[in-house]
Length: 609
Ligand code: M6R
Image (cartoon, rainbow, N blue to C red; front, side, top):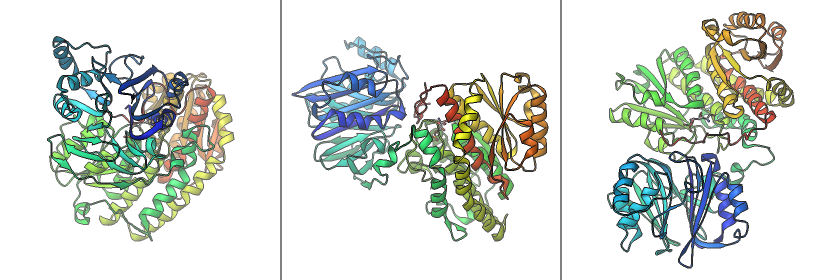
């Protein structure tokens, strides 16, 4: 959940790396710090708050050049987000500095042992034990000391380590938390994610789990934790620097909302091969899908909601029973999964700790795992049997938007693919579905064109202190996602409910001070949704309804509406509903003056349990 950036090479200005670190700020932003080595001395600056505040503090040093440095942006786990707990952390003699992403689970025991041995701790963090452990083992070689120290650690850690005694080396370590090595013209880099190094490096090496790298200005050596050397697998960076910029948008979230039509077009162009769906890395045979018994889906947050939409699809189109769980629950269930079953996981980052834990246990039992993931080179992509990339490009806003609709589109295609293999839909039905899916990007654009209308509605509704989001059938997950979007960036309590459950409790909340968002497309459950809206109206609840064009009945019952095109196959409507609800949440949060791209307490990539 923290962001790491490191550099070794031709001397380069501090300001460049602060820019790079800012592109990792989505991973955590409660405190930050830098350490560089100059004239065999550590230069350290840390502070609570965001990187722009560190930049302000460093204004006299911004053009300072260092041949080696490590940088960190933190999401606190152990210890408050203050200056002392911010990374980098050092040993007693201030000769070694480290930055860390992850959790050292046995840090208390290690800390007590190290204190008994005379080490002096200054912070409340788990990370500081690593610096002291390295100090304990340090003789002449930094890599030897790091390699001994990490053997004592339990938990997950991506590390960047430097020592003033060996300024020609940058050590990188990966266990459980992601870390890449960038190869640049003027030096080599380490980073938690590619956006940080986009202007500097065109090639990368994805460090694998339990690997350590000794990086110098002109060389990179990788070793397995057990000591054996590892061959460098160099890959080209496929993302362009502008993909990780806001361009002319006020926020990454708004930019990403607007990117959705293009993303969905791209997914269709990659996987719809003249009415035959083709997934190049699915790695599961037709025979496997024909004999498939049950499907299990595990994911977190927004990805879980995309999984919920897929559950309805797989049941309706493929005749499969589907169990859906939040990964944090799935990993602790004792399930009777067999080799004829499939686990599907969904994750934008591919680094979510609970989702990775879910697949590891299942894979040990010989059960196949197919993952839907956005980040190429992520741990999830590497560890799954089959992978389908969502190709949404970097998603930097903490609130997930384009990744969600990209996941839904990819999952719909997967359902159609499985359905054809099991002959549960005809070739004509598949063609019809693909034809209608090809119209979705255009329809999304129609909703995006209503941005100023939605902005006005959001202004009106941002006065409510609590929201209910109601949907039925395939739009029940849309209600869950709409509520999540609103609460994570506006901090207004919001609950997503199946509309049919309203009378079993949530109706007690409704009065003239509550906003109720009713998702009411004209599908087979429409009449029931209208009855729910009548019930809300009778209790003076304020209704914002998501309706199809020309739906006078729903409009009459509503205080405000977001209109969307009516689809022949209303099962695809979550792809449209999402856009309206994302814009609504965005403008409510904007109206309340919140930090939309970096909401409080959250981080984009949840790499700890
Ligand atoms: O990277 P993942 O898709 O695995 O992340 C899952 C959730 O952490 C993520 O969707 C989170 O809920 C977002 N903040 C939602 O907007």
